Image (cartoon, rainbow, N blue to C red; front, side, top):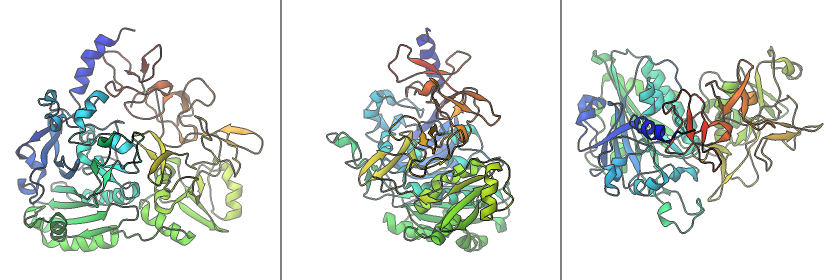
Length: 560
């Protein structure tokens, strides 16, 4: 297959539509994202100003510190009229070439956020973070401007840049901060769309940086360590302006970027005063006149009881577990609970809700909730005896809380998007792990209590049963088929003894699949080269060049 000529032309056109960003001397070209067109004052004067745009349209503004290699803030507006949308995921985060023009003159005139090759990373990493800074750490990339606040694909895509992200504790980001973002969406979504909601989300830098020595293999590469600042706090200020002033309001909140960090509601003026001390800036201002309106105090007081979250020591007892889980999980779709004989079952209406809560439960309680029974039919009671009898004929999903204490792990076993596998921490070392997520094989047999679903030294998931052994469905994330359908959790993308990867879809049919729903996952379990993400490249099917050294250096991709 002679694809190189096509790739050269097509790849150029693909990269040219990636997230575009312009490093500017002023925010004049994207001033519409600031209240009254005025940017926040009193922040680092030598930080870089970036108008984040894609396909010629601006979507938000960012003040980026090349010293800390994180954004100090991103300013954006709330988009009304969105249906429920999932955040766009590319499988890769973009970088800003113009920040590195001093290291590589070829970057001077590139106004596109782009993927980068291994050869380019040396120049790129001098003044900004790269994906590898996160891949061997316990921190997650936390976007300041969240994709969920945007309706269009381009708007969501524009948020997946490393100039919009800072290292966040996984529990803080995936549970507490995400819940606060959901609360803001609910508040603003209930307001009149003829108004405009201006938001600024920022970070408070610290002396703590990642990666730390001991988290990477090459101890001699000093420029790999202590590169990206971990903020002590993350904050958001909201200013809703309505044509009728009595309907306008503002509020703010600030959260501690740690596992059991607290999130506190503030007025904008209170937050401004607090940040002035933290930044040691006497003239700091987020919004002109603090965007104060008579309704502001009313909204802040109301939010105090609804979104302020305070967590203390690690949870251990059944009552504490359930309180923490119910506090941390979303307000809608909470599972039913059955507590008997010191065992806690959570009963979900569907598999999707269980998957959404799987990581949250581990992060909140250091317990995990593996699927405990094959289900079909409906549960009409959660009484213990009847539940046991009905489980075999129920469509509801039942999981049982068990300890997440894995040997050699001091933190929960969580999915690392950069490494594309599950990892935990053991002191300063990050190591692969196998989460306890299911006690049931794909054929419906119960796993032995001493050998639940896991890799057990293999490259596939399985467990021993009372009679023999069986394959297990891999844990989330769910794969996607060649035609673009999502795999079922009950039979996620895997080989299951075949020579190819396949899965079952919601309609009960099977298809070839890619293990990850992103632009760098190809069929047969292969991974696309960073400079060659999945695309058509002039053909009527999706494909990419892969990283595997085989006779054929390309592979078909799935539709996403």
